[in-house]
Image 1 (spheres, helix red, strand yellow):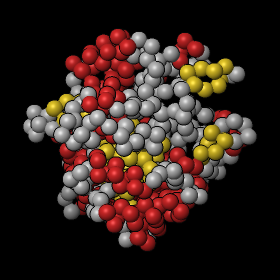
Image 2 (cartoon, helix red, strand yellow; image 1 turned 60 degrees about the horizontal axis):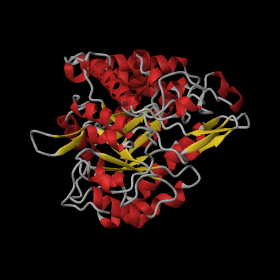
Image 3 (cartoon, rainbow, N blue to C red; image 1 turned 180 degrees about the vertical axis):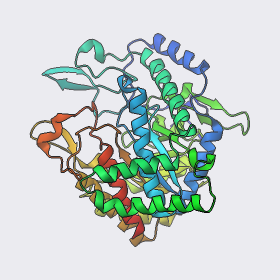
Image 4 (cartoon, rainbow, N blue to C red; image 1 turned 90 degrees about the horizontal axis):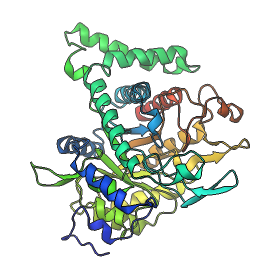
Length: 449
């Protein structure tokens, strides 16, 4: 690698090999678009990023809990007020449930307002017998299965910026304007309890939260005060298209540090975490909190080296390890990783992604995930950390507030044959709103125990 600790700048990643980048056909046009994005306002601000890092540092010590969730890959056509509202709504519902059960703050981070790029295993794919450029997310090309739509278009980067800005604008209005008030969110939870087939299983906890609110009002605490009416909500996405990330990286006027202002938290995937690769080189120099996906094929020594490269000061809140081993693999892979990181003394936040390694394909051709597999991996995650004396500090879901039929199981026992009823994803299957909240109640029971 050309870059060294003393020579980082926001363009030094270009001296390294950058994987998972679109094959842009017109480099001049690409550079023009990136130059334009460089002049546009940041999407998030350095102070907000520092606030998130401080909250995640508490989660490292078990004094808070990370809830991260949202779309597998956002789509321009679904950047609408109802879709944004419904995703935020289910995350807020889950957060209230987990906060009450755990007795600690929940750090709410959405896979939203920037998750428009996706890694692929190959540059091309077969669609209806024709080899086409792979769909790399709406920020690169279209999922439409025709050649013209699959050619990467740099103008889509600018559209992605504008869609992210619009999403953030609405999120800020919702979270600061009363939409996320504790009273309102608890009313949504009570509605879920009444309508869910397993509602009675969760009725007791929902009733206890309502009683706590009533008690607060009785002793004179205003549950409509700004502290209870407004919520902190942060955004995250995989830092994949490095030209775009560089264009939104700005030097903060207060501390002189460099922040990638495309989102509050960034993560690096299994396919792009090469120690000498461009993604590690870029991310080591920005001060955002970072997540790193760790799948079954990891090398423990590589993980430790990357932690040292990305977090040389061993700063709590900087690094989140997002483990994705699958229900069948977690007992094999997680304990050795925990022990190695613990022995090294690395301060990391341990989070579980129970989605990615549990994908299967049905006889009907749908990619899906089983609610029971997801829940099984989560249970193992908690139990293994408790056994090792470490903190299970967070969860990471692909979910939506819409009533989709993409994951099987749950209280309504969705079967393979029912997936076609409302299967909307162009990427990976997501938990729907009811399954997501049901999952939160299940996690709450784990936390309580």
